[in-house]
Image (cartoon, rainbow, N blue to C red; front, side):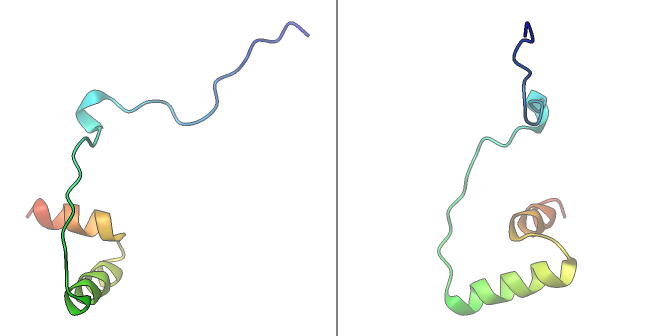
Length: 56
């Protein structure tokens, strides 16, 4: 015995990398499907695709 608890999981991100805001948007089914298709073509998740478009 004598073993202390070991922390599990991913270490915390630095403050500069933390995401702190969320945006909710309503889309038509057609708009959503176009967005999903573009993300798939880019090989990105939907969130990563939207973030990449904001960096342009």
